[in-house]
Length: 103
Length: 401
Image (cartoon, rainbow over all chains, first blue to last red; front, side, top):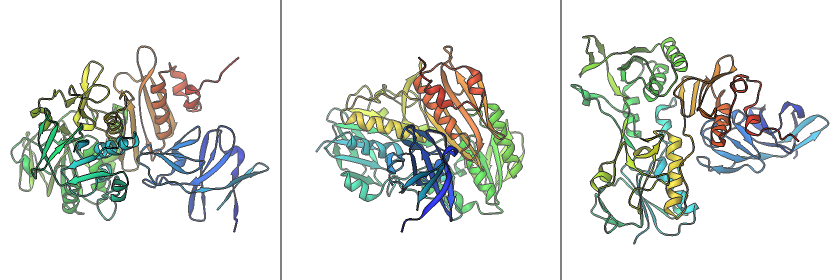
């Protein structure tokens, strides 16, 4: 059953950037793409459990701050070694000035 | 049966195998590795968790099988005949090849003083297991060499309750690849955590239970670890007549003078700035492995990007990219205890950056620095110095009408 969580204000995330969002013992990464669309993935890199929110967003990829693994944050797909396991992704929607994620 | 044969199953050799396949190579690919078991990552060896060392595989047996990559582990290549393109293994088996890759890595330098053979090294998963087995809380460990690996190990052992002394021949710790202000901060942290760091000292000898210094001082030691750098493993390449100069000489495509033989990673030397350089970093092993793999499969990729490294010391994260020697051009205070130093060439193009901060505080700026280096953009110090200016804007200047 859909469980929409109010995660942050739309303006909390710069364009082409990411923030960390912790909820109920879990951690997520919420992205704002260069074309102003919001996405959400698991918060930790699948390689060594590093918070992706410290990493670099370029276009539609997030690069892990530690070992340079890359994911397409729209799909969670692992794009570059050392990562080989995809990230889980979660639906988002914007209501008013708030970003909600479905977990 | 010929195909691609890769000598060495570390980060570089494994990456080369997968990249050759990604490039569309359909012939046999064989990795020959002296160690047993699946290829594993070396960086975690200096970062054990509470249970001890972590053997983190680079790939699974399924991944190798899916890509039809054969791993011959626990075997050594003992001779190479380049005329007939054949490698002979320690079992006597002969492997023909169309392309051969030296990804043989490097081996830890040994101490040459009396009793130097008593010191362990930290290079393989077996080395790590022996070290952490002996270095129990309350024991005394002497680490010779205050470079990144020596200090990473010191940090881990001190946190375990080991009495750690680090000996450095040079006048300062981390002198080879960390700028002084950052190195000093790391050293200060080690001292505050309880490590004893001695610089400008020479080891005279190692006895059962002691390290004797040239000035006569004696340090008790249950274990001595030599962390004095590595030497490229070039033996077989040299015997086979390949050019060796600070590693196996390769061009920018990572090919030797023999078009059927490549070298990459710790064992390979490339021409940079008029000298033959080797890059002993995990990322270089990965990138050069990728390039060599693709080129063996018919690609034409050149190794030209800046090399990146990281080190974890307690909760401090150090990262550097490119050339980080010479005068500091700009300093960016990312937050109260995180800063990044930048280096430029005569054309004011960024050539290097190195940063230190808690956790991954400097990671984003170092990644952007890497992209700025690759893009070759000219930089003014004021922009780098100002932490409120997102470095991304320097990479993508706003287009004005």
